[in-house]
Length: 640
Ligand code: MIG
Image 1 (cartoon, helix red, strand yellow):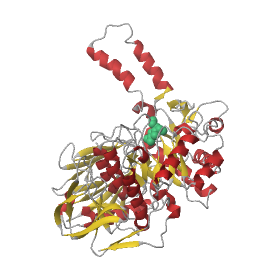
Image 2 (tube, protein in one colour):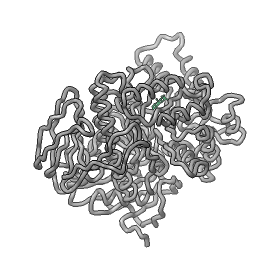
Image 3 (cartoon, protein in one colour):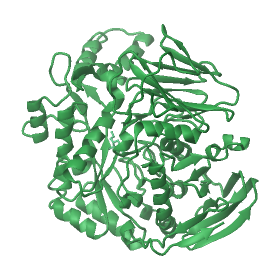
Image 4 (cartoon, protein in one colour):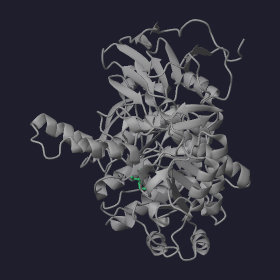
């Protein structure tokens, strides 16, 4: 008998040990409750009831309620987060179905492709199908979605806790090249008095995009530069990419080849792919020895004083593989010199346009996983998880006295024990601010508590008003980072006109850090959520079930971010009486007690709406230049 009566496990085929779970649940006989299983098709079908809502899946497109679309767990380097996409960078196969009279949860522990057709093919059917038929299918029972979340998280283990300074504000941009560029960011923030704890280093700090190298011309005395920035209160956070440049004499490449640590093709040779460094091999993070070796490489940077990293391109992203490129050139010969009709023209065009992240390429290489040779597509969604695990375990070994910041782009359940996530290459769109709001509670459910989006938007040119509204939401997300793509409009907060407003808003974030940290730690310790949909808290209030742009943060406040351009306020639904605080800054705000129901609430461009729940309080610290300088002993209390 299991001690975990609310968790049942059903075993199909011969599942791989993915590392997602931390407790062993004995297998139950038969097939999962609630579902009709079709062994021929490998489908699990549940008939959705009228009032069923479906929650979960972590970082995906669309709403908090996942009903009405098909989602595919298949980690993808997908820079276009449109609502018609089925896959983003992450795969969390955890779902909750709830119609208030009853609810249940499921988790499909399968790191290959898994489809969740949630009322897409048939409005009223939830159909789950995995591409490979070897997995553990878990069912959770409980009285409320929150209980199901707890059951799931008991199964998959405690969430990662970052160093406290990682709750500060971070400035990033793809395009900072030199120590001088970074110094300038630090100086401009300091001059304006806008708090800052982190500056991120994107791929240009490296020598020719080689992991664990520093370009000596751009950073002539890196160690001292790290010290200089620390003296300014700033942590430098370099990026690490999955692919290792193929280059004679480059130690990481040489050692990887010598020890057989790279992913191999069927014929035993190392796969040759291309990403930013040009041709690369992919470290086999699933191979324990290779993981240990790669993890230890971070020491090059931690020895230089670095205390945080972001792991990128670990779906893995593939611009092309050598083999596929050959096939494409062969294929193109077919067209050369021939009269082609319009259909052939499109075949020709597809040949070239489908080169990057081509599904065929994910079937060309293998891993050594738990002593077995496994083809990549079978374990695809584990790659980013194991890269991050390799780093996290190395930090525990090599830097036991330090808390190190770590987050990743690709992820799978289990990675939440080693690091956080950012949600990848969003765009400077108002709809992506809204998407950020909707993704956060789903991420919280799946244990990815340290999470956030590129504030202001990554792709495309942002605007000052979008940036301000996004900051007004970002101040509540545990990871609060402004990041943008190469070639886009500069969006450091000092680039705009209303720098005083930005200073006040980021200052408010620092004021909120005691509350944010306590709420975060509570979510870790209790296997709970840092951000919740209203319907999780107000179970019996039907109206809350349709509210997707207000969130409960921690257990004392509700937020209602403005996410539309040119809006000077918004409609807010209050499930009960609450105290509104309309913040312009830490010490400039007005309050008002509002009764339950619908309200139109004004919020000028520089105003943030926070609502205190009855019987609760919000404790604020006086803003400081960085987290280290916050006085957390003397807090101001606003109570209701
Ligand atoms: O192909 O390192 O999502 O944050 O700035 C793009 C450059 C590679 C993707 C990441 C983004 C980062 C960018 N990277």
